[in-house]
Image (cartoon, rainbow, N blue to C red; front, side):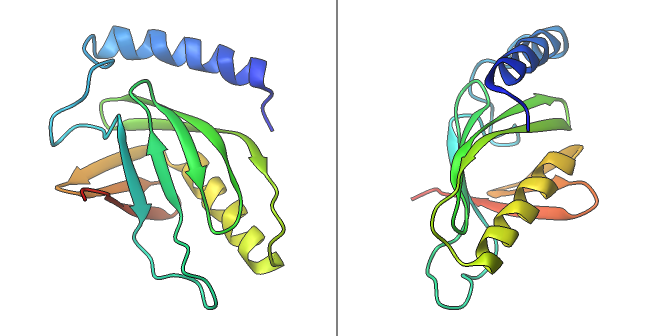
Length: 139
């Protein structure tokens, strides 16, 4: 797990990369751009016995609030073109069944593993060893 200081240092380096590659990266992107300042929900059905579906709230600077199957926490996205880096911060371990906690850990690992992203309308995919598909919350 990366400490807050380590995450802040990473975010600073990533911000420099973003400015060097895309000078306008700090502003909201067009419909085909990375969804800074938006919320998205994982494109999966709820787990049995739960109505909850993981979602990400991405700030204008790539900061992320995660609400997963059970856990919640913060992280940071850095984006340059179609390249993406996700760094998870500390996660709040809530009282949850082992299968949901494991599903949360696997989701965080898949986000961390993603190397690229793509957008097709309201669908955002993070691609690594496993592809995660999210839907923008447009309502």
